[in-house]
Length: 228
Length: 230
Image (cartoon, rainbow over all chains, first blue to last red; front, side, top):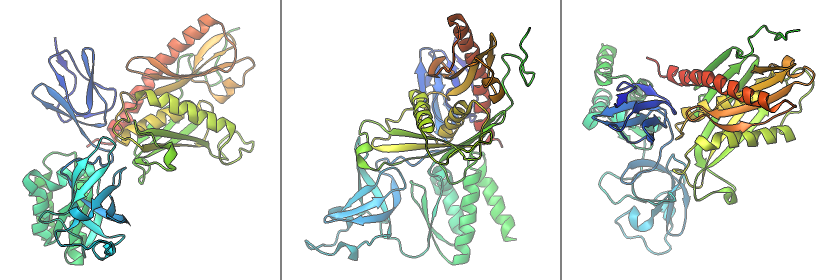
């Protein structure tokens, strides 16, 4: 007989037995040991039919293909730039992937992106050894100018964006700021300084309460009451 | 004459334990673990870049542990600040005790750093350090099969006892056996022995230690869950 030992949305820790029996299937963050399914990450249990997975609560950003991230230029070489991705691994942005305009051979690459500049970019490839390739040849990907960069826990990014961007759009509408959220936990806020601070406080509030359900309504109330 | 423990504990009774996760804000994961008068703080940084480059392992991530007693932490005699032969050895056994549960294949060439500091010590510090470190590693979101739990067992005046204090450790002919287990499958990941005791008593001591470790494991799990209590 299969038996489920945890509730949906319950906080679970490594080593905790989630289910017994072969009717349940282990997914992300869990493993099977003979008849038992055991948790191997700190997170929230998610039960979808007979599939058990863990939605992690903590941890550093792990680069994945097709993620749009905000990166910082940390080195300039002959053929491109090295970019810090807020993870354990730096990425390479090649000249040919950086811009559609012509760059002459031997040109001074710092004219385009200099050390310390921030860019919005997309990861196009991740190898087994975590070598990362980036591209900027897509609409919306560009060098960041003005505004401010803030850091949040990358595991809370889906919460900050919300379903189809509902949460981030709400913050945009209420503060009038331009907001770009990178999957690696870096967020770019651009607007009037006073509004940027407002947006910053809202995002921090979401980050701190990310594991509470019904958060969108709560933040909506908070914004409406704050304006009065 | 029957042996009585100096603090009137039962033979299989642990000292009072407090545990807390997420005590150091800037670290990726951290923990506080207090057992009796021994206090351990553990902070985990990473996975992050590993330099010098020759230390990098392309197959899987590296674990580095550092065990350090603060100069004022002991019983009053001067402890020199910084590393010593003793702390280097304990750093190594801590690493070996934690490695069997960790899965670092996701982080080739990177490193996970664990720093364990003791502001106050009263025997059983390496065990407290391992307990704190495994809470901190889980708090940092590292993939791990289980939390490692550790305790010291001993043989004092013909009796097997659990979780020795400094006073008991210093009794003549006392044997001190620090051990760490992986609670889920009861495998041993640390076993050291200082002193002499009969084989049968050692087996008994290990069984008692396993039992005590499971109690500690419950406290470790609770510490992590309490961090996310609504």
